[in-house]
Image (tube, rainbow, N blue to C red; front, side):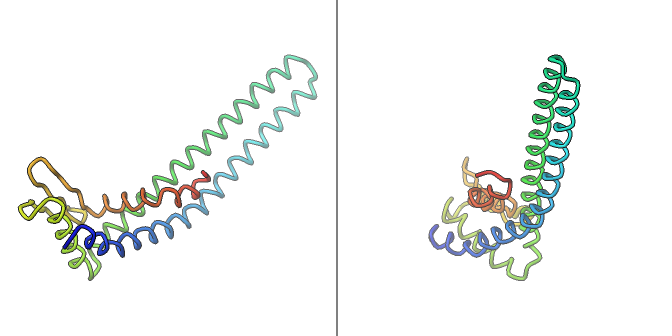
Length: 173
């Protein structure tokens, strides 16, 4: 089997991993959006309160303090949003890796494992040493060359390949 045939054979797995990532990300994203919106609304409300108090005081010192507090609140809100996005990224990655590792229970797993063996031999040669990975898939070695075809690594690769599509989940464009 050629590398192109192996790639074609792995296409359903990659599509399934991408579909699973999208499904997991959709639910997680809705929750993360709600949390992020609540955090931003709370931060904006606090910033508005700080500005209102300073205007009422009417003194230059109070206005300077408001500007500092407002900047601090905006910075904190931005940091909170970034932390929420990072948490979401990690959650999506964890969910995709878990679903990929769960493929070992799928009745089609032996066929997948055989396609991975063929791909490893095509890439590293027939004398490659193939070892099943504990979390599913396999790792192949031939001399100093190593090919990681474990299911979590393949899931990471599928998620990375879909990075442009998935980036919209974190609110990035």
